Length: 288
Image 1 (tube, rainbow, N blue to C red):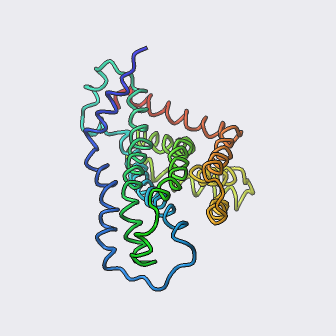
Image 2 (image 1 turned 60 degrees about the horizontal axis):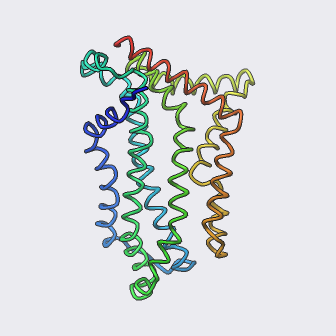
Image 3 (image 1 turned 90 degrees about the horizontal axis):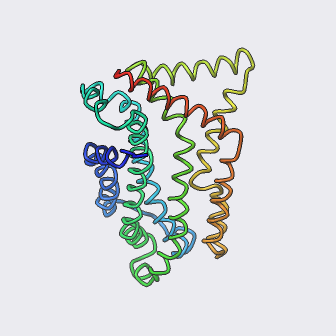
């Protein structure tokens, strides 16, 4: 079966590349530009060898988070993009199926663009680490550090984070598709109605009627989302301090996060995501 997703992904790149590049490159460049004017007091506890890999990871995660937030803000509106610019008839006339169009939009914005931003953040990790550590520990000690070993130490952390983006995207799909479906069917009122109305409904059920399962389900989803990129942050700090094999520890951490996909909670939330996806596709297929 032929797929048109690569072509549709190219469309997303051509249409949104400027915003994606700004979201990826502007924050680290601005940070480096403002760093000389910042003021740091005292020498922090811990060694250069522990801080250097963490700065790489923090840089990558920060840029990834910015790009992901931009995507989550944009995606509900993209459900009605082709209707708003009156190009829906053109896209429906092409061989591609409506489901492919919706899937490629979510794939590009919710995963590919943020992952690309994370790679950019990791690339900026070296100049950021040099600048920050030079101001914190002194330039002599910083330049004497074996940066090749730092990169080797940071690699398992970065790979764990990149693998975790897949898990994070899966756990975010219910939220993404519900908001996209609301926007597609209810237009501008969709997202506020879902967020405000859903929040009020959950609060009333919990506080007035003692129905706790909706709140518990949302709290559980929040926990799963927090576990996606790193399951045990305190354990990572202990591993860095004790000199454990980071590669093995990161594999164990990834396994614990991936194991949560085998839960009934994941099955239930995927059912919500599939329902939202079907609603978006149905609305698009109708040309509305």
